[in-house]
Length: 309
Image (cartoon, rainbow, N blue to C red):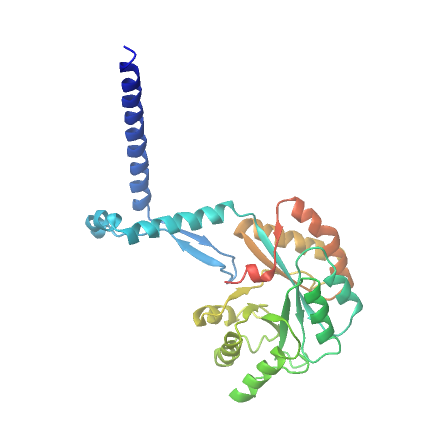
């Protein structure tokens, strides 16, 4: 009798394993027949990446069983499941870019000292451009080039080194290279103004070719709703992203606080957001006061380099 008990337990365990295996197999087959796509994206032309489930037409059902047995097909399933799980489990991420640095030192120095990642987007050829890049790098902040570009409104002056529509191709290339190497540690680029340039595919292609040449990423500041820069960068294989929220179109603390809340909601909804502010004292105060609260609410503030793809 004592010998029969272990045998009985083994049989029960074997039956349990077979039942569990059958259930899992049925679940997997149901998963394969579901026709759906999961998108990890932002609205208003902002798509940080697409993760598509496997889609099969009804007339291909006979081939599913054969493909399913192949290692390649199984690997595709596992990869899609892993990506989906990552999207669901990752906390909402928010990256900050501070534009228009280089004109002055005091406010910029305060922003550099913030205790969370802030990308410093520096204009070329200005008095403090090089020093701010050095100070920012030493403070473990990421350095970007705020590349000046022509605006539609001729009353706006983008500043020295600007890309303009009347420039020849080689002039554009030289202007981009000169700006990239004006100060050190540049890892990415975003446009300063540029509502006219970012709608121009020919000029943006030249700019992005130079950005790609030096293995930099590009963030579309989205100063024009008709910008083609982000989509073109994706097509060209340039690591890229697009701005979600402007923080300080108005220079009031209450307004900036409201925009930070909007950035939080955007991140909660889409999984990721990019907020762009400027080198202004109220922007600094708002960031210092409200970002710790966002972090407590489960928002992960991350370097911009972790957002682009």
